[in-house]
Structure formats: structure tokens, C-alpha cells
Image 1 (cartoon, rainbow, N blue to C red):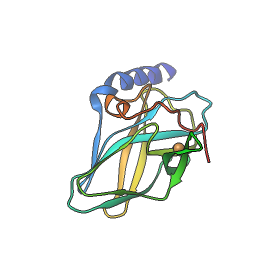
Image 2 (image 1 turned 180 degrees about the vertical axis):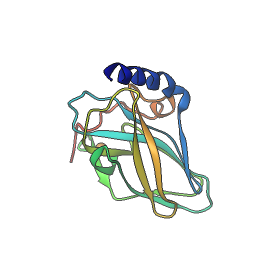
Image 3 (image 1 turned 90 degrees about the vertical axis):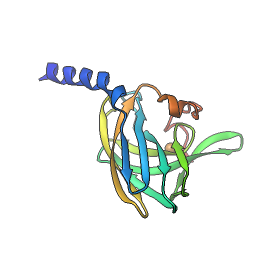
Image 4 (image 1 turned 60 degrees about the vertical axis):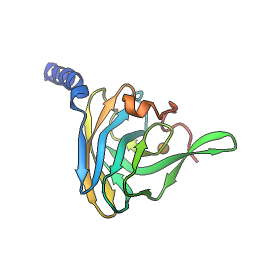
Amino acid sequence: MRKTLLALAALLSVSSFAMAQDYKAGELQVEHPWSLLLPANSANGAAYFVLQNHGQSADRLLGADTERAASAEIHEHVSKDGMMKMQKVEAVDIPAGTTLTFAPGHYHLMLFGLKKPLADGERFPLTLHFQKAGDLKVEVEVQRQAPAAADAHADHDMPGMKMN
Ligand SMILES: [Cu+2]
């Protein structure tokens, strides 16, 4: 059994880069949801993706949930007294024709109370809640480092370190 799991894990990590996933809900597109591999004792994690609105009207991201964590919140980073801190955001507007990058140091979905450690290359389900487009279920891929697209925006903050 253990050998089978290891083989499966190896297979998943080899294939993961070739299988970056896009998801669509109406005119909204979610590209390559991912999460940063963290030390096994990390209580919290974060999920990132690129969100595009190809439509003619605005939508809003209202929140998310996943069976993998006790709760999920939309967070942003703000500079406060010279320190970068994370804070909860009730919703994120997605104007028509825009691209929003959820990445380390920017908007992210904070995952509180991970139910088990994240494993390199694994995928876990996450449901995004949009005001107009409704629910969109995606698979979040756990990676050792940010994908190139997100890395361009990232300032390499670790999630879960500083909280208001
Ligand atoms: Cu956060």
C-alpha cells in the first residue's frame, strides 16, 4: 500500500507541470490554482491563482471553501507602520476585462486550520464563490515554488506569518 502511494505521488509530481489547469465559470477564468509547499507543522496555508474576467460586466469574488482547511478567507497585504501585514477582505471586485493575480504578497486565499500537511505535487479541491458566476470548483496544486507567472508579482512573503 505504501509503495503504491509513493509511486502515485511520484507520478503526480512528474505530471503536474504539464497539467496546469484552467477553469471557467461563465466569462470568468481561473488559471493554475496553486499553493506553496510549507513545513509539515504549518497550521495555515494559502491558495493562489490568476483570475480573468473576459466578460462585459463586473463580478465579485465573495469567498471560498475547501474540505482541506477549517476555513478560508480572502486576504490582501497592506503596508502598516512600515510592515507588510495581511488582512481579511470581504470581497474582491473583478471589473470587466481585468486580470487579478492572487500571489504571495498580494491577494490570496488564506486557508486556516489545514487538516493535514500539504504534500509536494498533490492537488486538493477548492470552491470559489462568485456573486454572478456562482460557484466554481477548482483543484489546487501544491508546489515547491511559485509558477513563473506568479513569481513576477511575488515578493516572497511566507503566508501565515503576520496577522492583524
Ligand atoms: Cu493571509
